Length: 308
Image 1 (cartoon, rainbow, N blue to C red):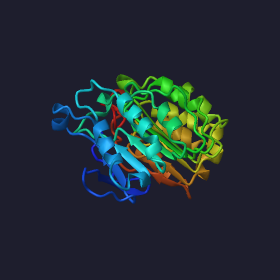
Image 2 (cartoon, rainbow, N blue to C red):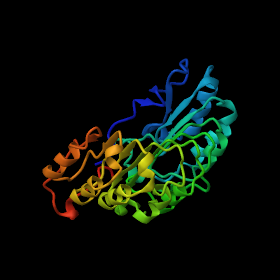
Image 3 (tube, rainbow, N blue to C red):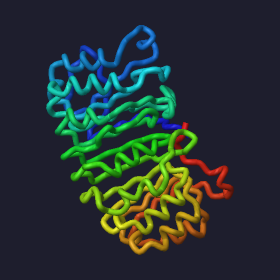
């Protein structure tokens, strides 16, 4: 399975495509992207960004959604990152960036080539939300920000170095962390022990939502979460989109703190009906068990939702 739909709302604002020559509305999140034909004509996303910055009202933009910049996977996001860094003085209110809002009809998630994203954090001190899609080439030479509250990293396979960078991050205001761990077949080489700095509760004092999503190793991840010190102060645990089966589900049921959550999201799972019933009885926790795929008992035929 791949990501099939474009985001329609980002940072609480409807996402609308930027059209050169049309007036801007700061109440929207502006999406800039080039299509395949434009790339063949030699157009660059950085040129479109410059046109956006030259449009009256651009100084008020709070949210930017960055779509495709390349269709043959030959160009990583470093040029886009550099252009955004250079634009920072002209975007003084920018609080949210989605880098790589690309769906399967444009490019498979595993084909998206990212780069070092740290310069964006340094360039935008008002940034509150950073969302990145694509794990290929993704890295953070440093990961620190005094105001970031939401970090989402979507991948068919999230590299171990990225997971470790998050575990070592200095993000004191972070309250929402979402990592799409993915499959080792697509670069997701992080191990459960690499999550230890996140799960031990020593970092991210304001974290209330933890998403360890789209994990092929969801059973092991669930078992680690079930006994994690950080669980006692979380409100939402999101293990959705993964290959979670009875082993991981039973670990969650045995946890002393899962029943104190507000929400437990497990949708897209391989949990048996009997164990699902026990999870559903964890009142007052809201447990999302939709999109169950029970019947595939063999590990070989259980998949996370987003990989290629």
